[in-house]
Length: 464
Ligand SMILES: Cc1cc2nc3c(=O)[nH]c(=O)nc-3n(C[C@H](O)[C@H](O)[C@H](O)COP(=O)(O)OP(=O)(O)OC[C@H]3O[C@@H](n4cnc5c(N)ncnc54)[C@H](O)[C@@H]3O)c2cc1C
Image 1 (spheres, rainbow, N blue to C red):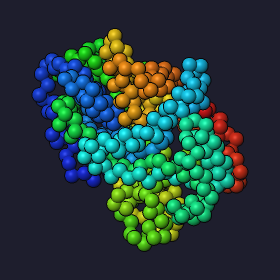
Image 2: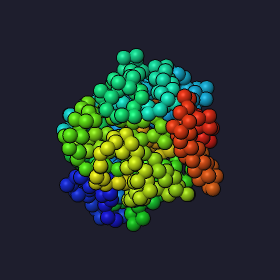
Image 3: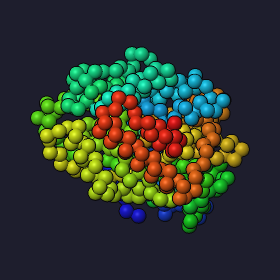
Image 4: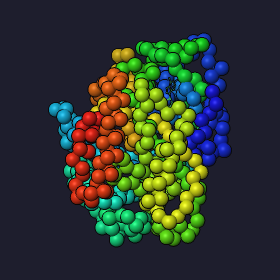
């Protein structure tokens, strides 16, 4: 299988994605280890990292179908942000989940930015991490109302008052001089990263720690103590499944579907651009349109600009190697031009990737000690930091420790199942069409509040 180098991140690295990993040909017909981890994204990598630290004697092997960072972890927007990968209303529908647990989750996700930073420093992983905070902007009145709502909600569910701030247009533009900005919500915490540098840096660290990393080694099926690799089998005391948006092919339980997100990356921009538009603080940048965008300024002065577009393919087909269609590329390019007008951008690369979404958009971290089986999934578009936190949670569970992390709401969380096709496809298509229409209406009619049917769209897909 050829390595996918379609994401700018992977392609920008000189390293061959397969270098220094264990050759799958070395696998004996029956290979034995203490812990087998399936999936070489951030979930699997962090899990191997923390587990090897907790149990240095354990023989740990990681199996990745393609190459490390092939999935969302090597293709994302590089937002190491404070966004929790959860829908709070859905969590609170469970009588056993309390507001205090959600506040704890939020605090832990905030702290995870420093945790990742500290590991990168300690392990000398240079992943362009820069803590510039985060700026969510509004470009119409209905979006101001949403920003105010987010602000209140963040304060109720875990943020301290001095950690985020509503800004008027004038102050917001001092951060990033976007002419159409009418207000902003500024988060003190948040960091941009180069995700492939982090993924491959973790891989190098794991190899140095004595973890076996088998790339180009798809797991065909697994059950208690046994992985089926086709030509060989693996016997393992513990098996931990970290396949996120690709999970259904292994789990066949309709718990998680791949939803695509798409990205364009500009060429490096000249000094005159930055003088005009500012962005000297390297903040993460997002808007609060229903079909929102996310952006970062990279270390080498490009803009990464992402959003949805062809978000779901019938029957949960994943993003494959990540080739992006022309229509979505054009939509993103147009929106970039609207935010930064009168400048002709050159696009260096466009790609897409699959994130993993559960029916109620809440992740789950579960471990069944009797069977030695663990599962981590459902981070949606907010997994860069939370996968680190989930890995630490899982290691506490495996080690039988009762900690703050094992009290987080995602512990042994039971996600509802997705509808079978064609209902799933119809529901998601309808939601996206309604959200696009709501955005159009809010701009066109200059609405002061969110279009009424946007709420219905969120309900259809379990986002409210
Ligand atoms: C375009 C895009 C932009 C995003 N932007 C952000 C962002 O800016 N900030 C943020 O917080 N989150 C973002 N996300 C989400 C974030 O990237 C993910 O939540 C996170 O990377 C998930 O990591 P993971 O290890 O769980 O999954 P993945 O990185 O998807 O890893 C799963 C791995 O499992 C492997 N695999 C699958 N099946 C098998 C098998 N049978 N055998 C062996 N291996 C298998 C896959 O090849 C893959 O490498 C984005 C996602 C996408 C797609």
